[in-house]
Image 1 (cartoon, rainbow, N blue to C red):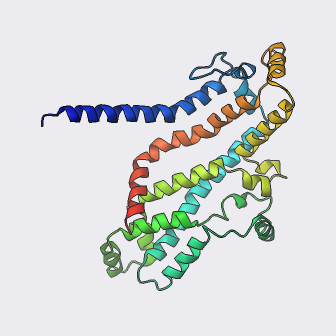
Image 2: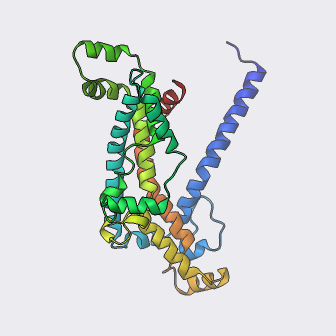
Image 3: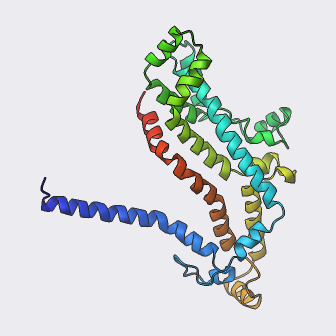
Length: 299
């Protein structure tokens, strides 16, 4: 088919728009990467775009030299992996039960789940509840409270309701029970949406530090990477408070780059916490769009 002038104009505009969107999306990350590798005091001058003006590894050395960073990284990886797998599995079980049209309590239970998205018990009651359950100063506080979540349950349930019921009926005729059907038939068919939920959960768990601050801050062996990095930024902010830009730059000139600044720490922190998710995402990307789209439109 021969393309007309209008087709060429449309394709050109489409390509330019996509290039613009990619540039707008990619520039902040590349700029943050450049700032993280730039000498901290030189960063105060500004003007850094896509390449560090004075290359330095001092920002990363300051972060990685913390003796608690290994423990924090281990806890962050542990909570992310455990929560992503266990919570997704438990949520899928609930979704399977509520996707069964023959289950008479599926509607009221689903409504209760939806209400949890809008009603919160509050921080103080939650703290007392967790303390009564023995979850304060306990690693299990990172994954037990979120064993099932309403949003993820609705996404998985909607996907399951789009599957053909003939699979389940055939298995029941052969004598299979519901748990066998769930494990051997439903889960393999739901891999796209499960991969999507695993990615959602992993990103949230990896980036979250508030529960560490509230429930586990008194035990250093339960700290997480994001909480330690947050403390470093606050410490740098406190050290720089009351110091003008000119004073900070003058002091940095005399100290030959042996100090870090909140801006440089924040940039290095962003890169450190982003790399694991960026490394995992390509392996789940082929499931991501398909799982979220199917789970969001079929009902």
